[in-house]
Amino acid sequence: MKFKFECDDLDGLVLIDKSYLSELNDDMIYALDVLLDSQGQSELIYDFPNEEWSTVRARETKHLREFCNSGKMLIWLSNDVDKVCKFEEEKEISVPSKWLHLPSGKLLAITAGELIECWPYLELQMEQIFELDIEQGWYAISGDSIDKICYCKKEPQNSVFNNVQE
Image (cartoon, rainbow, N blue to C red; front, top):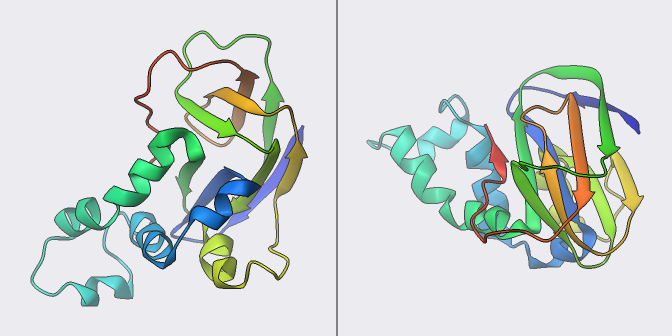
């Protein structure tokens, strides 16, 4: 499947099962905002006077990274992108770089900025990149960039994931 991905600076692509949206909270949404600002270029730096941004970012995004690395969400950070990308099913992925758990089978792809903006109002319609109904379960994901993301249904071999691509 091809999809159009457009985002501004300090944004990214998020993949999440719709059932996990209810587990997000204000602190995690704030942490997502901090995560997107890898260089400390936004007004968020003023929330942490006299602290190195790298230290702030590591501390403030710890809980969000743990959420992602438990298989509940994937994030690819991006800046100023407008392109057509691919999301394709493969029969086998021998060395997955990420893992995603889909307990409801309703995969949602959105920009991180849209999630930040709309999360407090989930009853409203978020502007989605795509929504895909697939079989419930665990999925191996490969793709270090958003250009081509591959997935296949597969049980994880370990419980340590790296689901944030910077």
